[in-house]
Length: 158
Image (cartoon, one colour):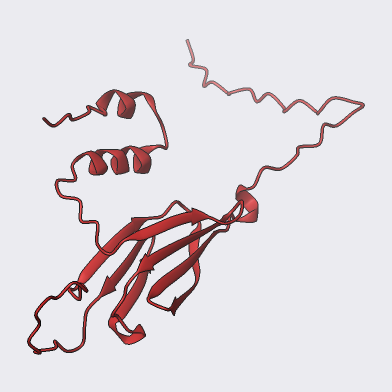
């Protein structure tokens, strides 16, 4: 049984939340969930995040990390296929592509591959003009009132 949500009432009554509502709508449409490779997402500070992916068998040259606007794409493709005869093959070496939707102003700070774990560090950097600021309240005399302009009307001769 599948339950779908209708987000149209939220679109009618909210302003500026388009991306969030579109993300919720897209998440509700996901049919299959591929859980490979396994990963963790951790918050390591107030504005710092870390994604850790288990990519055993992949080298640094086999992995690609791309950030395009608010989308982080991690993909892996083995360079050459081993044609050996396996009695059991439990280590997955298939190609993958994992996508992460990033909030505004989240940037990739760095990435490293150690012992089969790919670690991607992210940081939210809010521009100075978007941070809250305190507005000083003037004391003393009130602000001058703007001049009222009279609209000239053309008089017609009688």
